[in-house]
Each structure stands twice: as structure tokens, then as C-alpha cells.
Image 1 (cartoon, rainbow, N blue to C red):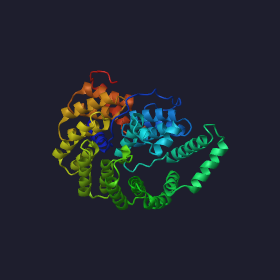
Image 2: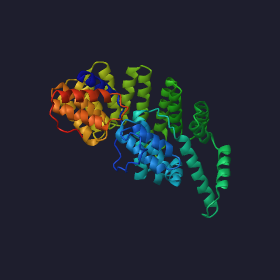
Image 3: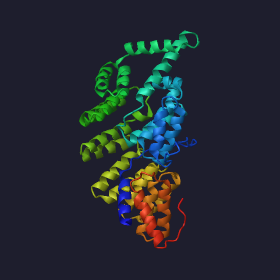
Image 4: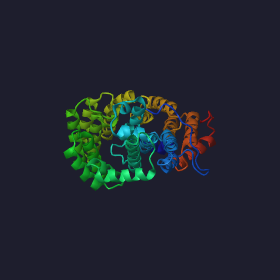
Length: 410
């Protein structure tokens, strides 16, 4: 049993995605339905999805707790970014229009970092709330324009509706492409973004959108080529232009690497990750992927080296420490793996999986009291639907029957 738990837990750790720093301020947990599982990230995701359009602040809080329970959830981070944007329609208008004081404000930079983190987990994340954001933007823009022309006076909803309709009818291709994307019409969005690229002065963000759309429709070679063009455009564009955090060249190269991995071109993927690091020496997600590629190839020494660099760069990030612990354990450095997991638990107290790996490692060392405490910690935090919960509960019963001393478990 304990060997099965160790292998399953280590595999999960190695598969976990990676992100950047966590949010510094914890909102109160929003209440769930009486029957809901408060250990379930999906329960908080569902609450966020239900409220993102009408109650964005509640949704933002729900997505925050989804990410606390599952730090590897790109959807939770993206959801919080979206909900925070939608909570202030006027700011959203300035943000989408690239108003410098808004885009570069500390508050917005923190919001952008959520999306950046999500893209380091999944560079081709589908922005499921784009339609909601788009509608909020258009209505905010309508109010801004109409109230300005009316000397600051409020305007009726019917007037706003007519303005939005006319704007969409007369809008440029990039505006209509965003609408098509929000409706899930990727082919139309690709066509419109292609038209927008031909007409635009600043092309990089449009090419980036096209690249991600190509990835959505499984045209990975076209996506990689479009990312390459976006990177070239970024190098040529005026340094005075607004560049969003999530449009960094390092992140785009990371996307190229992920595409090559999907296509099985591991040498090309390593080259792309190397370019990402050359663009930004602090871009630790590329070190994580290089470490995972090395581990898959049986090169344990390189895997440990790359993951050590990743752990230094992403020292406060739970999923980095979690993946590093798995690599250390596979390399036979169990004490170091235990230390890494204990650091993760300190930083992410609601994250269940590190407790399971820690329990399995202690189990393998014959440290039954510590193993029992870790397994109990896992069960206390794991969702009822967690695939390894039953195995952990079984091991707890085995250890208790064997008379393992108790040291607690929360």
C-alpha cells in the first residue's frame, strides 16, 4: 500500500503545473451550499463561474480559494483576474485601451500577474469568460463616451444598448475578433485577427492571440510559427508602447516550447526553453520544463539541477517546491525531498497533495508516527472526490492497527 501511494503521489507531483507568486491578501471564504465540499477547488470554481458576470467580487473571492486549495489551477487564477477586471468597468475600459497610468499601476500589475501565472501553467488556456469581459468592456466604453458627450450626465440603458450595437457593427477586425473568440467561434476569430494584423501598427499582441487560437484548434505548427512572428514583432516595436506582463518574450518562447513538447520535438522544446531563460533569467517555469524533460529521459542529475534553479526562482510558489520534492525523491534524496515538502506545506496550508507525498516518504523511511500525521493531514484537506483519498484512509487504518504513535495531523 505505501509503495503504491508513493508512486502515485510522486507521479502527480511531477505532472503538476507551475505558476508564480501567490496573492498576498486572503479574502474571507465565501459560503458554499450546505452539501458542498469545502475541500473542493471545483466547488469554489463553480461558485465563481456562477457569479462572475453579476457579482464579480464574490467570484474573485471564490476563485482565490479555488487556487489556495489547488495552486496548480490555471482556470482559478484566470478566473480571479477576470473577476477583478470586471469589478470596475471604467478601469477595464482604460486597461483594454492601454491607458499607461492604469496598465502600469501596482493594482493592475498584480492582476496581470494572475493571468501571467495562469499562462505559465497552460500557455493555451481558453479564456472562458472572454465574452463576459467583452460585454462589460463595451458597456463601460459606451457609458464613458456617452456621459462625456452629455457633460457627465447618466444615460438610459436603451441608449447604451444602441451605442454598443452600432459600435459592433462599425468596429474594426480586432474588436470583432474578440467578440468571435468570446462566442467560441475560433475560425472566425482567426480570420478577423489575420485581417487585423495586416492593418495594425503594433502587431505582436494580435499575433499572440492568433498563435493561441491555432493551439486551440490543434494546429500546433502554425501556432509555433505565429509565436515566432509575435516575438520578432515585439523586438521591433517601439519601446514606448505598452507591453503587458503576459506578453513577455520569455512567456512566448515558453509557449513555443510547450508546442514542441506537444508535437514530440523535445530538442526544439529545450531550445525554446533556453531562449526563454535568455530573455529573462528569472523565468523559472522554463527550468521546470527542462527538469521534467531531463527526468523523462532518465537524466536525474540534470533534472535535479534544473529543478534546483526553478525552486530558487520560484521560492514562494507551492507547485515548484512540490515538483522539486518529487524529483529529489526519485533521485534518492529523501531527506531533501521531505524538507522541500515541509516548506510547501508552510506556504500553502490548504494544499492537500504535499501531505500525501510527505506521508509516503515517511512511510518508506519507517517513520510511522510522522507518516500517520501526514496522511491525516492529507485526508483533512483532500476533497471527497480525490482519487487517492481512499488509499490514504486505508493506510491510516493500517498504521493505527499497527500501533503507530499519534503526533496529530492538521
